[in-house]
Length: 477
Ligand code: FAD
Ligand code: NAD
Image (cartoon, rainbow, N blue to C red):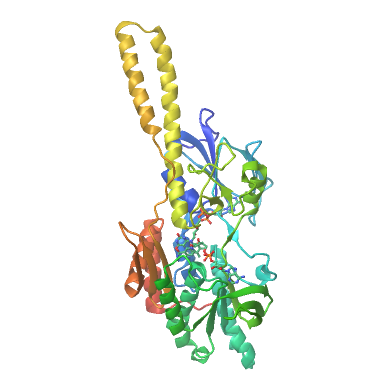
């Protein structure tokens, strides 16, 4: 790409926040020659989240599902600037983003401002804790690479500590109790991966823990995986029962301490009882919450005052009540579930919209010049100019034809352990709801095809082969 040290003053500056599913899909499909593109994110890589639960047990290595952002930006037609930083505030009035380098190594300048003409907010969401005491201090989330690494270390730490010489039976039982809070797909997939780790490797290598290791999945609602069909929910619950996973539904966690959680269970007669559940490892997967930078932007825009879960956007993904600000993915509220599938399609839509906006501007400029030329031209020249104007107007109508964003749902897939997956697929007409081993192979091939690059695909296949032949790596660090 052509490197531009300074932004081209004839082009608008498009600032993109985040390097997740939404922003990266936009960048992949954007013609970067039309804008001065600046990307800001604390993460200099894209993360393929669907395989993150597999990283918690080392079945897939985290680097296999990361793609360095600069690796793909270098193939864009015009250079894109990337700053590894957190956007700390969007000043909507002044059209600037405040950014800060919050990494370990910082230079003399570690906070500054980036002005924008157009802004895309794709910062995702943070983990919901609902203000429940002790969650942040004692549990592990599962959203980022660091979270998966922390869980991987903690699983082994619990097991090694449980088998420490003279450990009391009660303490051993606690340390080998792995509790997952939240029966959405993140919680279910993690429980499934952990069960696999136990079945395929831990049981063989540490027979002394085989009758003591236990996983509990806690869900506040009456069933897990609420977005799947009834039949698949039943299939998942039946599969978990056959394994060492207990499902505790209608159980809401209210408090977390270092060694146990306190949960409120609703009994069949409607009465509620509080219970203490000791744990060794606690994984918290109760969904999304709004990031502070998004909440702050919402406060600056009066039209956002009634929005609670993120930036309300219109059918062109424009942040309602704002000009030249768009939002994609988990931080945008457009009546779709916060999934990678939605974020990727939104990003692709914005790229088409921006490509078309740039073409529209170029054609309009040409038409302006032609109409001036026409006023001065005579004879044959005038006929030629008039023909050019007609062509230009036709082209303009074509590029302006871009309709509003429409999400096309390809289906939902989740891995549930023991080489089984569940899938609700809406293809052509009718829905296909399947579960089982065949679905598992479909899950594997679907996720493989969705990986960011061929490099990622090869690394993931190699990890799967390695894990199947040699088992998962149990070393703690
Ligand atoms: P993200 O992908 O979260 O990206 C947000 C980006 O913004 C990141 O690069 C982050 O570093 C950056 N950022 C954060 N704060 C700032 C800031 N202040 N300034 C600048 N940048 C910032 N969905 C599916 O459809 N299928 C699946 O199988 C699936 N599996 C999942 C498994 C797990 C374990 C998890 C956690 C999620 C899964 N999802 C899945 C959901 C999916 O990952 C999200 O919906 C998707 O990542 C949303 O994309 P996004 O671009 O909005 O946000
Ligand atoms: P989620 O919002 O889907 O599920 C969280 C669950 O936690 C809910 O069922 C909720 O009732 C429960 N919960 C909340 N507070 C609780 C409490 N105090 N005690 C007990 N239970 C409590 O969250 P998620 O699973 O992290 O998923 C987030 C988003 O990412 C969703 O849109 C999901 O579809 C998507 N995702 C998709 C996949 C996939 O398609 N395979 C995988 C992971 C995530």
